[in-house]
Image (cartoon, one colour):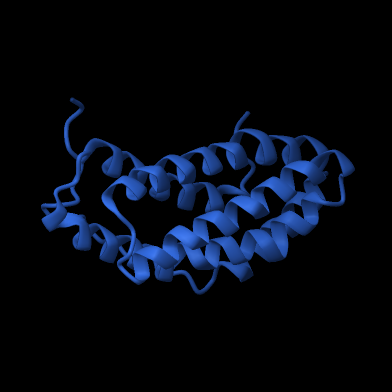
Amino acid sequence: MLRDKSLIPLSHQHQRALALCVRIDRSQPIPAADLHIWLDEIEREFANEIKIHFSAEESVLFPAACKFPELLPLVKELIADHGALREFFSQTSSHTLSAGALSAFARQLSVHIRKEERQLFERIQQLMSATELSRLGEQLGAALKDTVHSCSLPGEATRLKPKK
């Protein structure tokens, strides 16, 4: 199903986060000397976009989804995912996340995003009217207004590596 325009800003952010996950996956094993570079980049991404993204989902998207009883279990699961992912982000900020845990973080973030895209977004588009989706898009736009839209390129250590 094509993504409704009200959800496209979230989907674009998901694409950027998935690209980060792919780069982490393809960089395995991450040399110990490069770990701090990865952690700094992830910390920056969280501060500039992901933190605000989570907040927008929790304050706008999830309450809208909860109006449909069938989506309640999924929303609860996604909220729990946010908690676990915030713990990973906290560890990147304190530079206590290991290279092995970084790989687990990328897997968990990727699974979470795909769950939102394939399950929550698809179902919301089926259940909400065009008017409801439009109003949701306006609210999401306001909630996401403080994200930093930068075109930061990965450095040598964090650039995309070819598949092995």
